[in-house]
Image: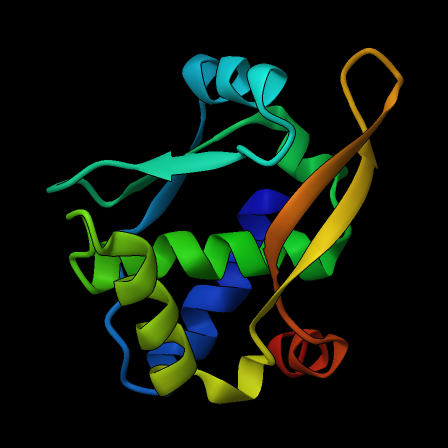
Length: 136
């Protein structure tokens, strides 16, 4: 699921002239550990890399959240947003370059690795209308 969502997102960004080639997903044990400790931690990126390191739990989220998180992580890479203002930088870039995404934050519940309901507060999400655009 994650891979096909990222591929659709990259195609869309490319159609808008936003450089996203070379960005790849890797399922990562550290990301899994971070998710176990914090319900809202699913992915991370590193400066000078074009890789999004993801927890397996990303697949357990509703698609609006999964794509929202991937869009957010893409803009860490695309916008070189890695300093103390990185989150503001990413949000500004997403809203400026992809306003049609309906990018917003909301709480999301999902079933965690132990079969328990977890609540992740303030998760990056996109609109259902944007998901339909990605699927065209």
